[in-house]
Length: 352
Image (cartoon, rainbow, N blue to C red; front, side, top):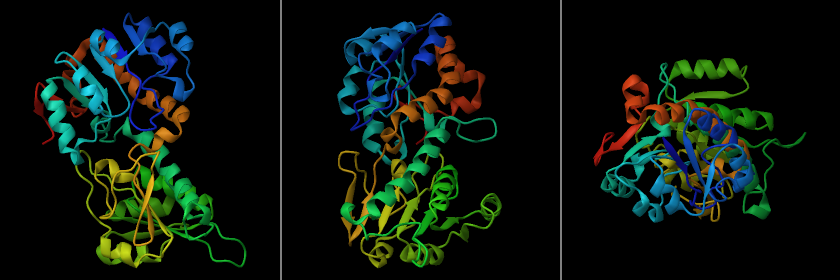
């Protein structure tokens, strides 16, 4: 099969969909791999590295889309890419369609097949491709929050870990999944006071156990959310419902009661966000204020560390890319959990 990897064009998206090592594996299996010129430059991979691995370098995105059967990307197709997509294409990438009806309509019109990284499941029900990006986003969320809490960045001017004799900052994490646990790991490491809010008591027991009681665990309900959010310097949205829009858990009334100069980082923004006042932002314009509270809603947080992210993403996607390259859409018939990734096919939205 001919596999195409275009250069990502989403705002400040520096990840590449595949590493030179991944290319080498596909070429050894007898497939052709087309890499758009400079597609890997943001992640530190040169065209020469891809060529040495056996790829063909193509000058522009149109050339990649025109020749390839399987298109492997990182982020959802952008409007400039819509006209390049053909009915025979299989597009394998992050889509996050639940909160973007406009994107759904645009992709349905192409007639192509779209398999979303974030809804591919493993046998145990976990999300093997989304997980490494959630780990990165969770860890980065605390670094980002700590940055914007600094006074020169517009924040209250508070050090999350405090110092002896000075009260440390409080971090509330809403959601105890992969993002939430990784955010807590960094926040605890910085010395912050940390609370995780989650609706499942078994998950809270697990979190209490792995952190040895260093994290406060709270059952998710409006009272606990409001109280913890109002007391916090940094609130991290980390809610995920597979294939669905994130529930709105932090209301605008709660945001009004937060301290001026506090920060919200809503990692669940890809699925619509769990904070009523959040909206999507970009790495070039990452923040805005509502009632004196800094809001960060970047939809591709792992793109800020593309070298790490590209390696982690390729590690997760390669087994699936190889199966698609070998069998096309027939690969989905062999694995019902892989089939869950098929969001759109032949003009039909399967997760409606």
